[in-house]
Image 1: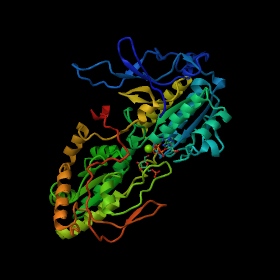
Image 2: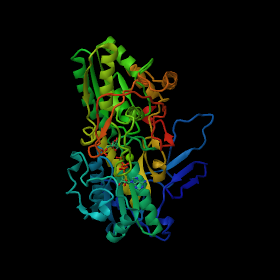
Image 3: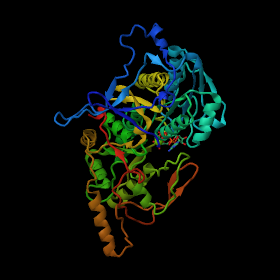
Image 4: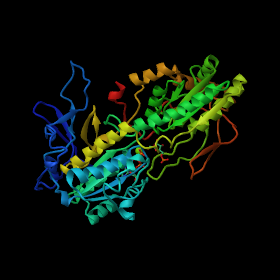
Length: 525
Ligand SMILES: Nc1ncnc2c1ncn2[C@@H]1O[C@H](COP(=O)(O)OP(=O)(O)OP(=O)(O)O)[C@@H](O)[C@H]1O
Ligand SMILES: O=P(O)(O)OC[C@H]1O[C@](O)(CO)[C@@H](O)[C@@H]1O
Ligand SMILES: [Mg+2]
């Protein structure tokens, strides 16, 4: 990422992973009194201003015998001295990447917060993500324009993938004289934000770049949880309930629900735990197999015999390697930002479940597939996400006004912090299957752990080798699908099953992801 980290130690030995400040390259900047001192709403608050020495511990659960002084982040909030005068601020806001409930609330609260708390009058929206900086006119924003946008899903400013051109973006920032840039987005967006910050620094500009982490997959590291996640989990309950109703109303009924989660299965995990009607939850972090002892088909058969119906929740990124191998050959497609496009695990499971049941148990399945993928992220944020978004927006504006830059905001152990951007994008967060939260799920669903994955695959391979290669039966229970990948809709349709192949990669994560964070969030404790 090319940025130098600002790590320092306090007198007591505590380590501070600090965020950049405008004075790092503009040491003589003047300071001003924070107008909040005279704001009737805030003036009465005792200890309203955050001390520069206030920090938040990254880890709060420690071993009494081995605990050191640990890593800390700068506490977010208003400072009594600020580095911008209200009339000099020209702020802009941009939203990038996929949608997430609450984006509009963050936009609204940045605008209203800057306006009412700091008296800023020049606030602009960038139209359609990063590329809007150099290809579109800006949108003038004020509290009236944004007054009711938090009641709508989506992004008022529009979003996009791809199109990040650091030079062109910073040229636009310079030309338009923006000095505060608020960037709402996920891991890709934050990598872009970091590049913008570094370029502004290189050009010696007085520009504060502030990130606000947005990811429905909850895959950004360090922060407790991303906004919109709770809303999405709540919305997913409607689909799971429908799947349950459909499944229990017929013989041999299966309700299959596909939820978002490219590489991290948090939505599926939490939606499953919240529902309690789910019998099987498949996530990208846990590779599974179909046939053989401990396999998916055996479990589904057992569950149907026992209960007559079942509900399966699958995260969209689950089983990708299995599907790819079962398809023999397929094209690797990426979206405009370079993210891998996923194969449809929902359709694949439907086809394989139905076929195996007919073939092995001579029983037809009554399978209903529900795909609410976009429905759970297109809704407006719920009440608690709205409050969360408000705090994020306020933390961001207080940080920028105080001259901090190249930071993102978010709660760490429930206290809002300023976190250096490289820290949150260095690695993605994944469900820790060795953690108690996954254990809770396993105990709720009683599903198999698929722990024999390696043994099953090795054994099947050996059997195939003995047979001389061209195995007439499935090695892992997958049926080869000839994929028609429509490059525009990205849908995968299956033709008639023809052949069988094996899979052999225990690794459930994307190959290019070398560092994986499986931190325990407070909610998982
Ligand atoms: N490494 C990078 N450097 C600079 N810009 C990037 C980088 N990766 C992605 N971007 C830009 O960030 C924007 C958003 O990226 P992306 O589409 O990956 O979504 P995201 O922010 O990760 O959000 P999500 O994946 O949660 O929807 C795009 O405009 C993309 O060009
Ligand atoms: O179809 P789009 O808009 O690219 O978004 C799909 C992807 O976005 C994400 O929600 C991440 O934002 C993934 O879970 C999902 O695969
Ligand atoms: Mg992303």
